[in-house]
Image 1 (tube, helix red, strand yellow):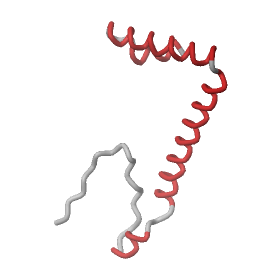
Image 2: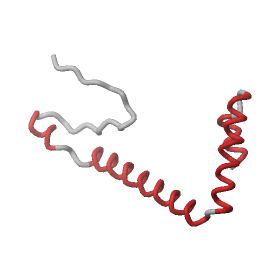
Image 3: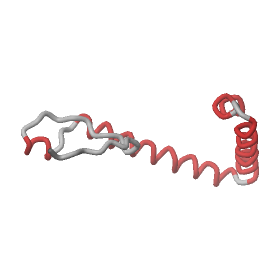
Length: 88
């Protein structure tokens, strides 16, 4: 884990300091409160699974809006996209 975090955030001095602080906090959390750490990991995995299922479902099953307009179904945009639609 240390190698992964430093590889991603260790390019600058501030990044290395922040990575060290995060790794220390995670270490303390896992050692002193393992049940809480597992619950947090489980909640994160559950939310990630739910979001990915919704994206796959939107890509596979066409929405009713697309049927009403007569166009082919397009996959839904990711919630992280900042694309705006404009009406002509």
